[in-house]
Image 1 (cartoon, protein in one colour):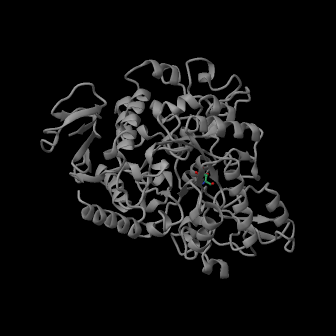
Image 2 (cartoon, rainbow, N blue to C red; image 1 turned 90 degrees about the vertical axis):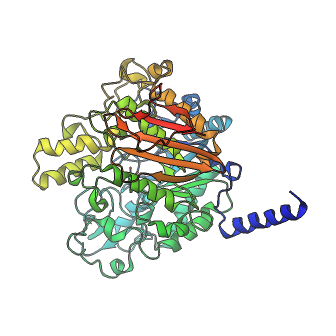
Image 3 (cartoon, rainbow, N blue to C red; image 1 turned 120 degrees about the vertical axis):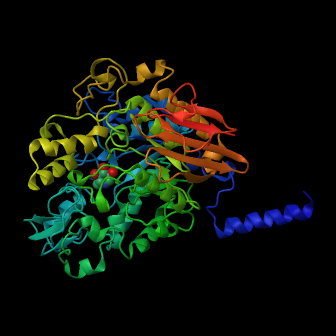
Length: 571
Ligand code: NOJ
């Protein structure tokens, strides 16, 4: 290249970077949170080092080498702050204190330091739409109508017919104050009033506190609900028929971006942190305002693929319908298209979802093959893969027998909703067993000893009864295990420019049996094919001609795909 060509090239690149600062030229231009997967930990269920029956921060520190073996660059910890645990920590009573169940501030500092020594960042959860009703702010707010924190929450004389996300009314009467307060989630989670600048400042201070403690960024909970629409503030109207889910009334409403821009200015700007928002109603066309360098967050979780079984995203479990593969594939392809110039997390599981092998494959599918097939997709779509604890072992749902065995507040809400809609106990339980969040929250299975090595005490939630055959210790020693497949996939993605930043294109979108797509970068091409059925399926064309198999969940190769087979080919 001569000098002139060099200068011309440099100008093109500079202009492109200016016009679209999130544009991706190759893996070398990516930020740290794009290059490696994230591992999500639900500390309560990870490892108990004290015998209390509840996991703790020291348990996470103890397992850092295990986590590192998955090739991850960050850990997202769900809340470990002081909390009455009505919603397992998403009801916070003190934003800057560690709940004694999880340990001490020194434990957190040690975790950050030990993780840093392994080049792993700690991402903490910010729950700023609501607090616990035991938070001193709420206790003061409810005490009278004229105390200094009287308008830190949302109080009204009249209630509307809105249904809360966990079922029941979204309003709760407070005798002390003689008014109703709004709670988008549980009664014990009153919504904070973001219109009040003092509330916002207190929340920003809490976020900055964790950055000062060494957190590498934030997962931001339920952020789309912080702005209540003006029409609501002016008169609390009843929702029109059929739309009384609070989500439909307040999610992502006008004016929310003003709050978020301030949040960004006060907390994120100028810092090399990772921010991922839970934002399930942001539309693809709104993404530029929400993510990337002209948006607020680095990226956000959207729900289209995980809510595919619910019409209009209403998330009423007994309204679920079977998943059509073409629809599922479309949600993934649409997300890939929407983020061509930005970035999404790729995920199938988290602490709010059932185990993915029980959701996306026929119930007769071999679960080990299914876990590897989903992992193949997790690591080969464009975006940051999020692995949820246990997913890397191929966990299955742990269907408890009675509703009384469930701890999860939303499972009980869904059960009551189903019963109120006329379902029998047995019918209602079928949906709870399939979708309960407790499926993701059973203790981590470390070995075949008592309580799967999770605790020497009584686990807060029963250990899945398959722990003797499905645990870390067994899978470590089995070269063909789901765990070792995850490690191979992670190493493959972490070292592949094509998988990290290559373009995505779906092939045969109407095929109801196979999911096939390519990733390309320059002259390099990778093709991924997954059979979602439990029988052999012919390939629609000779798609692998001239390519070499890189990885798959069957050892050998055929010119068709076997039951639940997943393959990755490259040129
Ligand atoms: C989303 C969290 O992921 C979930 O676990 C929680 O119940 C709600 N937000 C309320 O904070």
